[in-house]
Image (cartoon, rainbow, N blue to C red; front, side, top):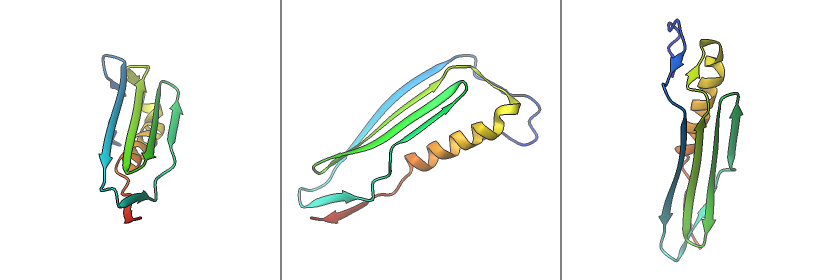
Length: 100
């Protein structure tokens, strides 16, 4: 997270495109509940897409992150913080597993 005292933006020195997928399976007599809606965030220069998908007793989290501009300007810190917090919250969601 950007520090309030920071006087300039962040320069990552590169652009980034990252795609990731995680899966979790449960015993056949259980099911997933309380699955979050998919998340799509688009800001000028960066975006994120994430989705939890359930198929039977398997849940898969797919995430896609793009930073198109290697520089995050200080003027964009409010959006950048919102962006990072939303991704953190989405990625750390606690869903329930119940019996069928």
